[in-house]
Image (cartoon, rainbow, N blue to C red; front, side, top):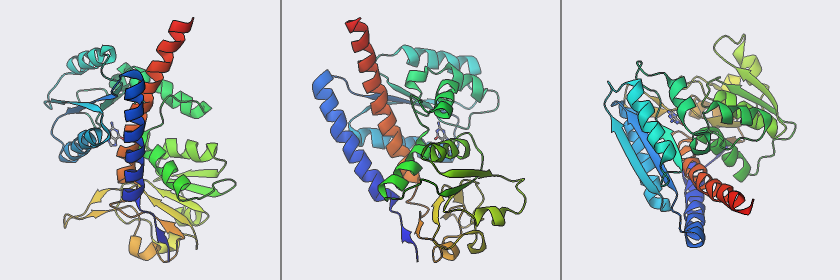
Length: 291
Ligand code: GUN
């Protein structure tokens, strides 16, 4: 029977660490890290996420600002807000909640964010940095998964890692991070032939598909580490992951639950990225003063 990885507890530990570091940073520099969260429209799931981000900011002692714009907001209007936030000295991190309404190009908006404030790690500059191994920011969910794995004491060197899902937010970046930790990485997706035969090779299986309970016991190797990134709302209103927990848990060595696994780590890592953004700004201005 698998040990259940407690994401709530690990995320709480990280938020405590960030709160302590932010306090020390403020004592040294007088600077309070600031995060701007932009939400366009009224998607209920996005509203919940944005609320959680503001609550986490308050807990770790950051300045947080929320910008709630109507669903019919134009691309030009949103670009102008981002431009203002790029110049705002009190704001170190900018997060535009996705998905955006269809009249707005997500690509254009992400590219408009100053890469030094891109705490989501979605800007092409940071995506490129992730490929070559030196991003300013790592996307929050993948960074959270790596932290869960590290804090559980799992060594990735030489392991077979299989990622199911190829999104820009999770699948692609987590594959690169696992590779950087010397795992042998396979990325699967909806057109992969004989998916169970590939997922059964995994020492570490990352499920980031968005289909409730799709990963069954016959798709998992005995003793695998199973990380479930799915957050799916079932018809009965309950949350379910991409992994059939009851079937898979007896076979795995470690497994993350939904809720209470990867989810809380995403927000903890957003706090860490925002603190890093504020710190990076100070070290950059120090450099300018020295030369
Ligand atoms: N929508 C779903 N996940 C994310 C995320 O990590 N960041 C942003 N900005 N939007 C999201």
